[in-house]
Image 1: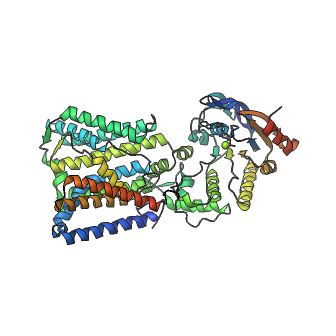
Image 2: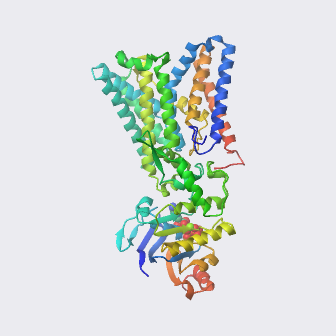
Length: 324
Length: 247
Ligand SMILES: Nc1ncnc2c1ncn2[C@@H]1O[C@H](COP(=O)(O)OP(=O)(O)OP(=O)(O)O)[C@@H](O)[C@H]1O
Ligand SMILES: [Mg+2]
C-alpha cells in the first residue's frame, strides 16, 4: 500500500483521503435527498465538468503549497494567456500554435514568479500578489471591455466534446490528476518540492538545487493554468480580461480542504481532487437551491477555515501543543 | 602524513561580525581532527565553508594540491567531502528513506523512459544502513517528525555512508545519542580512519575528543588559536585554551 498514489511520507494520508471521499459521498447523498435534481447523471457530470479546471489548477497548487509557497496570480495568468491566444487564433493563427503559445506563456511566466521567489527572495504571498495585479492589468490593457468568442470546432471539442458519454474536460482532469499524483509521490521533482517545503535549508545542504526546484514548481503551476484555461475557454467558447477573477481562492481552498498542509513539506494530490469536487458540489447544490452568489462566497470561506482547523488538529499544531 | 585539504586565511563575516577570521589549517589523510571551542567560536561557520554550504569572503582552499571553489554542497561532495550539519540533518515531513537518500535518490525507469524513484530499493538499503547502528525503527514509511532525537541523529549520520567520502565532517555527532548509539558512532569513526578517510569532528565532549583524536584544534572568537597533537596535551590545557585563549 505504500506504493499507493496517496502519499509516501505518511500513511495517515491514506485515511485522510478516504475520510474526505466518504464526506463527499455523504454530501452527494444528502444533496440528492434534499433536491432530486442534484442526483441526475447529467447534473453529476456537470458538477465534474465544472470542477475540471479547478481540479487541474489545484493539482498545480498542491505542489506550490507543499513547497511552502502560495500562488495568488493564477486567475490573472489565466486571463492574460487566454485573451492573448484567443485573439491570435481569431486573427488566423493556427489553433495548435495558439494552444502551444498558451502553455509557453503559462510556463514562462510561472518560472518568472518562481525566480522572484527563489533568487530575489520575495515572500511568495507578496510576489504573487504583485504578479496577480500586474497580469490582470496587462490582460485589461489587451482586452478591456472586449469579449472574445468563436473558436474553431477543433478546439471547442476539448471543452464540449465527450468520449463514450464522458465529457472530455472530466477525462483530461482525471488523467492530469493521476499524472500529478505520480509526479508528486514518485519522482525526484515531487520529492524535492516536498523537501523544499519541509525545510529549505536542510534540503539545500542535502544537495537539492532549491532555487531550481522553486522555479520548476511555479512553472508547473503556470502550465496547469494553461491547461485549465484551455478547458475553460473552449467550454464556454469565450474569454475576457476579467475571466478567472478570485479563482485563486477557489483553487487554494480545494487544496486545503484536500488536506495539504499550508505549512509545506507534505500534501496529497488525491485529497486535492476530492477537495475540488467537494467545492464544486457545494456550489452546484447552492445554485440549485437558489442561494445567492455572495452567500456562496461566504460559505466557501467558512468551509476553508473549518478545513484548516481540521488540518491543524490532525497535525497537533494547536496553541500549546505545537509541533513543527 | 599527506594532507587531504589545506585552507589558508579563510574569513567569513555576517554583517559586521567576523564569524571566522584568517583560519589556516590542514587536514591530513586518515586522521581524526577534533575542533573544539566555546559556543559561537565559529566552528559551524568554518565547516560550512568546507562543506560547500557557503562561500568564504576570502581565503583559499586546496584539495590534494589543487585549488578548489566549493560553491555548493554538491561540489563538496564531488571532491569527497561529506558533512553532518548541526541541527539540519533531517526534514520532518519526509519519511526515513526519503531523508536518507535526499539529493542522491535511487531511480528506475517506468515504461522504459520515465524516471521514477525506486522506493523499494531505497527502503531496503536504508534498512541495511541502519542495521549498522543499534537503532530500531518501527516504520520507515512514517514522517520522521515523531522520532527521538537520537534516532534522527543516527539517520542523519547514516546518510554519510552513502557517499564515497575522503573527508567526513561531523558537527556535534554525539549530541542526543544514548550510550550504545554513541559507541556505535565512535566505532564508525574509527573504522573510517582505518580506511584512511579523514574525519573532522566538532564536539563539546572532551572525553570523546581525547578518545578519538589524533589532533585537536582550538577556536576562540572566530580565530584558530592552536592545533595540538592529542598525545602531547591534556584536558586541562584544552579547557584553559577554550576558556582563556592563548594568554
Ligand atoms: N547565518 C548567520 N547569520 C548571522 N550570524 C551568524 C550566522 N551563523 C553564525 N552566526 C554567528 O557567527 C558566530 C559563530 O557561529 P557558529 O555557529 O560558527 O559557532 P559555533 O562555534 O558552531 O557555536 P556552537 O558551539 O554553539 O555550535 C556566532 O556569533 C553566530 O551568532
Ligand atoms: Mg556550531
